[in-house]
Image (cartoon, rainbow, N blue to C red; front, side, top):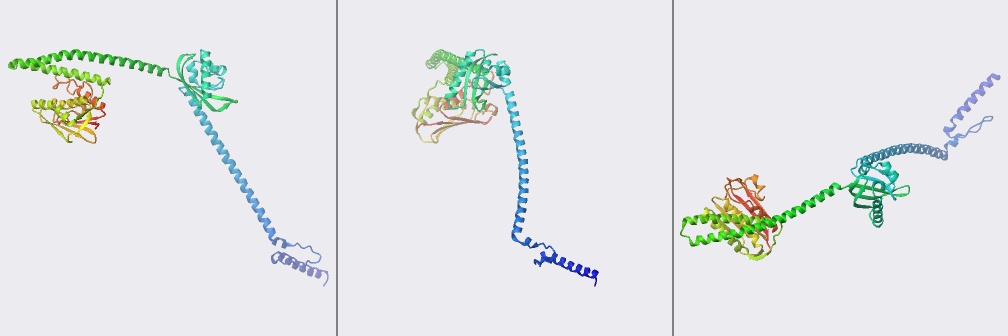
Length: 453
């Protein structure tokens, strides 16, 4: 065959061996080594421990990547949080600065001993000093009198040391460099320290105007009480000086009417004198009663009374006056006769004023008085068919000296004190009064007074 033939045979053989060698990892066969050739053993890659190591290495890489990503994310969040906190701190500082600079109260930050750390513009204006001067000279620079500062400082220091509270509030008349002022000062311990020293917030509130106003009120109150006492004395003396001769006039008129009953012309004049005198006496009595009510001089005396009988006797006079005017005054008792402790004098004044007004302001019709004991409340209802009251005047109904018709041409007489006195007395007895009325359609008055059975 020759050398060329041998070469071809050898080449074919080598090709065949190489192909088999390439298939070895797939076939998992360990071929016999060929003489003169280096053979790699690929079966090691098929072992489980190698796959486990490769898997763990892959997990380690993934874990490392995750940690790196998380750390990057945390750094970003931390950076954002720090930026947010810095913005919040800056905003709070701005707000504090605005409050500090624009507060109407003087504020000073100081440490124990009186050294000033900072002072706002208000205290500087109040004392007419600069912040630099206060920082340089301390709190005592606010005052003209250094002894005052030492005395006040020692008092407040003792109080702060002995007090469980962290704030002391006192009022002083302070000799500031700008002049004497009434000052309310508040000294508070701060939680923070300054260079190892206790920090205090001193707040100065100028209450000079408030004190001046209070003194003015006190003076005005004293003057008002003095005027009230003087008015009471004048009314009491004048009422006595007027009522005494007036009673003499009325008594003499009644006596002359009886002995000269046949003289009709004289009786007419005597009746005019009597009616005018009674009107004047009633007005003086009302003024005296109102004065006593306003000065709170009335004393309540409760007496056990048959209420139905007592009210019936009061209404007798009103019924006779009503008959003269052509008006029927009726009484209706919804509760059987009962006894209770009542203030007779006050109750008589109340009933006389209410029923008397109904008779006075009625020209015809019926006036019904209803009495009832309802749940230990004395209920008095007076319903008339008189001229009524306009809605505009109802709000002024209980004002002293107020009347719906005014001037010299008014149709009805009276001082305008009856209802004011009535309301005072009802409230004095812890009761209530209600009025319902319509112009031209009569008036309904309802009074309730607690009873002591």
